[in-house]
Amino acid sequence: MKIQIVYTGRSYQIAERLPSEIDLSDGAKLDDALHAVNQLLSDDEQLPPSCLISVAGSHVGTLASHEDQSLKDGDELVLIAPVAGG
Image 1 (cartoon, rainbow, N blue to C red):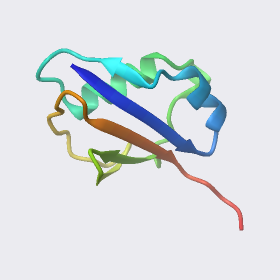
Image 2 (tube, rainbow, N blue to C red):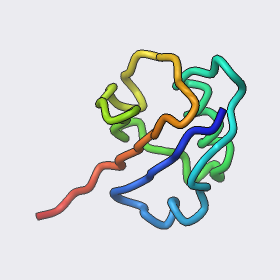
Image 3 (cartoon, one colour):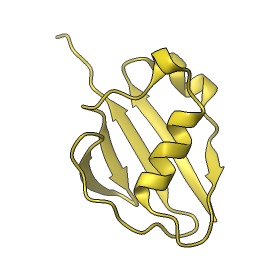
Image 4 (cartoon, helix red, strand yellow):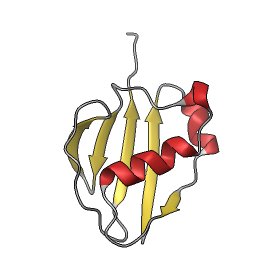
């Protein structure tokens, strides 16, 4: 199945290295998708634990604190890195 990936927020240059979609096996879960995304990044570019996660338009928590859930073909995974400043 294909999952759409959107990355926004701090470290937007990471988004340039991430594909707009990833292929996962049928029955894949959120943690499978997050693992696949992190595998595409170097060790010093891993997603921050405070990164917010949205699946199919619903906020599901942060990278450090979320419930794993099943994904469907065509779901959109949005990763929102924290932004500081005023």
